[in-house]
Figure 1: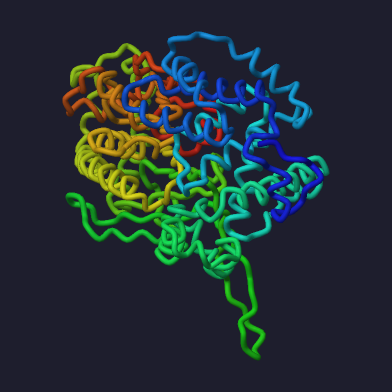
Figure 2: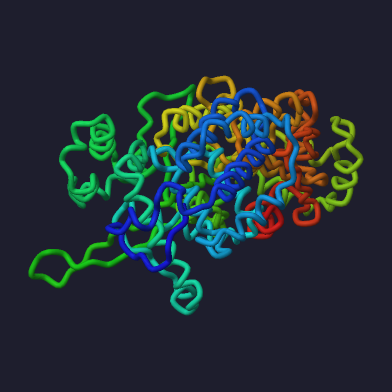
Length: 528
């Protein structure tokens, strides 16, 4: 599993990686036990049992451990044997072949996770867990994942100014690329199976000989057929290539766009000195989808604006949906807020919201007189956002994004979209291993812990509820609706005892619902 640092090409793979023989028996055992302990901590539930066993079996096979080890590892996996992590880490640090560089094991584990073309969200969460246990920076984990993508797509990594300036970081990228070249050669063409949605398509130009290791014999195997099928079935545009063929409910608009595209001017192939603009984007093993809650302006792209600070992955999308209705709602919200200020009732409203009173009697008469301005667009958008959430679930379950982990983040009605997406997925077969993290901010949805408990089957990593106790506007909007059992998630913490559940009080950052877009950079920093 370890890589000798003097090897720089896949040609020397048999000398560089010998399926775990580089580790001592104690090292192999410790590596496997560390993963078993991580699986027990992260996914100790019935629905992840099959994944846990497959993950452990894959590692045992790769390390060529004797069958006698399996029962003991299975006991660790089930939690029947409790053991500390530190002794195993110390053993790995003493491994002669890796010389204390535990990052080699992390990179190996990432490669192992994509060997069949499916990078399960649970596998990536386990990678993150191992990153912390082995005291490796998350930056290095990102570099390793990028190196795998660079090798899969036959592209050279695009370096930022900071990377060029930092010699240490350059060395890290070079080493990661070398590991990936060697590791992918070992794993073979199977690493391409199923990684669609933009990852596999660029490989078409590389030639089948390059992809399958220069041997036409593999094309007759099941793996070869799967590779070819994956290549020619890929649109190459990621989620932006998705077209809504079947509508859910009343949905009129549903499409994805890239958040972090780079425009590049290239000269046209003609005699004239004219240029065309090519849109480029960085592909990654993990993607993020950001969902806006309302629109304030039809001139500025408000689907993109709040998320310019977002840096959750190298490949990020925004969801464009029902823009005309969201714009009507945004304008109504601005009108209500400005009217509230002019009536000098802000302090009264804050007191009312904090006191937890939600009744017609508690609200100032002047504000109630303006309710008709916002009640209808709010009701329409609530209904449509629920339908959009179900449509998003269909997209993710059908793997339009490829077999890669997805992080969802949204505020206000965007959080409501995520809520209904998770709810729909939780009721469907095969919902596990798709969503890594789900971040709901100021969500106009139920805070019932029973409902959120269902989402733990869908979300492998963090299930985040960002709320503001003083959000008077959200309370005002709910005055005409039946208050959901368990309250409103955007106003309070969700009381769920699960390692995935994270409640973040944003009351010190925002004072009301309308501030979420402009304070998003502070909110993202608070949520880590």
